[in-house]
Length: 444
Image (cartoon, rainbow, N blue to C red):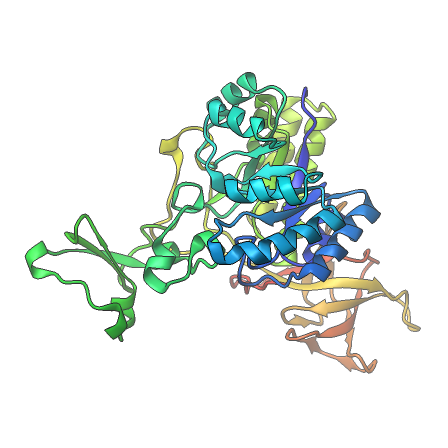
């Protein structure tokens, strides 16, 4: 490949960044809740961001800070203060959408590289050239850009770095520029506080304009009235309703079988979405994409690469998802919704993390200290996911924190126990089991 490429993972917490690096990510992205389009389920403050930079440096990895909100006047004083902090601790780059923030970074933190966020909706080579003239070192292309367009952009702009999202949730609006959440609940998606009304279940009703008057928001009491959207001058109403359909619910993006095409087209950086997802999600997604990218880098033939990518896609299907799609990569008519349900059924459940090995614990066997996320019982058949593979095993014994033998361990809070398996596993291995039920979505 002409262009060096990297795998960039979501960093929703320090723990998730550690998992991302451990399972093969070259870089991670994270930011403060107020500036990073992740206002909720985001534990970062400046102290933790500084720790993330130190972690990246210790492992020879990269860390990018997200500053990709569209700022209002009220944000500017705190933003300038934060940029002085950024200039001091020196992340590898900042990710920005707003041209005003670009200008501030150039003034306050001029030595920090700037990556243009996908939120900026860059879809053509002239826009890339403009941003390149403004000192931008990398363009994270809009998710609406097709493979053919990527090739043309690369040909016209041979020197700039290009990044593209390859996995994760897709927004039903262009590059995430959505007003539904703010309109319906006063929480702006463009400030990282989206309530995801596109994932609700709606049905459509037609009303003559003369017969329909939208209720005063201050007097709304009924949930269905609250979640009502009017279209086309109030001729058609979409109302949340249990009898309806998920008409805005876009499928998740999964391009693991097309990474070679993206590499050939000139993409440098392959990005995974999911800062609010679990450590399990981060570990499994990074592991899968790392394996395929390594196959491409090593020059494996097309048949071998296809076999590996097909196998890794099966691994990705063990994660909670909305059904997978290739998004806009092969044309704008390929974008897909799942009208029937909000998520695909999934039988695999994230049950724990290996914190450290405990040898034979005085009574033989391979014991590990486990952080429990969901119920784990004696005789449970599990899969242990580590960076070098997926291993089937069985739970032989469980001990609580007092060393007493117990029949089962349960998640919640910071629940730890000792578990004996058939073999030893390294720290930060992930434990899952087939439960017949959808995985409980957790954030840590």
